[in-house]
Image (cartoon, rainbow, N blue to C red; front, side):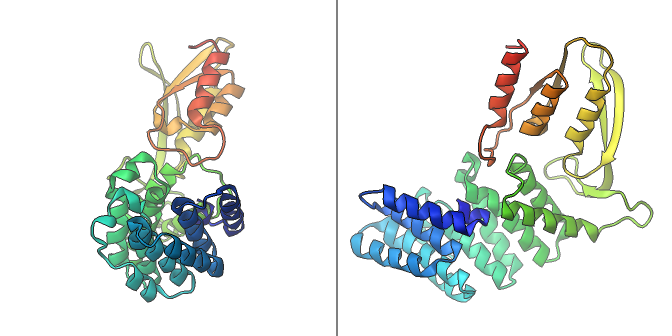
Length: 318
């Protein structure tokens, strides 16, 4: 996991720990460790583990048809040899390419190889296969990263609107991620640069944003309303720069302006299901009731829904 996050040192440490803890050195632990080491740049150790796998499990279909080609392709990719990676991972691996045993890694690494070759079209095909796979809907890490790969693929093709949409999908999936994760920081920088190329000549503060999934991104602002629930009355409004966190930022500003000392409860959709928003509501002595996000959170530590339950118990709302 850390190798995909862009933390090579931690990936190496985790792989070493896993190999030490696993007394039997089964195929799953060894292949996962070898792939992590290959992605982290320790190609020598990755190849050593791959040789061990091949010798120890000569009749294991998963090892021979999926794990080993993927490990060797990752090694080739790290060495800058994208053509070799694609040779090791042909476009079709029979039933193993889309099977659960593949864990989506072969398609994802093929996509990265095509990106290295500046072939945005072929890369987009591979990343789209990952995104459309049922495993992606279970919160698979590679499935989430495929959105970032797709954004980069569209950018190579000059399809900036589609690229922005894919970046937004990735950032939405990782809205609760630790902010210091290298690949997330890199994605935010790339997304910001993409938006810089679409600056309004009459209103430079307007940013590219879209109203919902599948909608076209347009230069705009984020308008927000605070509505009293019983009578449906608008009690406050705020307009923010469309920066990805505008809804939550505006909500906190409006909540802070509520007069009086009575207990306040606020409702919101799953976009508000973040640890930071819940914590700020708690600081304001406001009880949040928001829809739980459907996708898996990649933030290490306490999940937002757990914070919400704790918050509700503290305020006597359950």
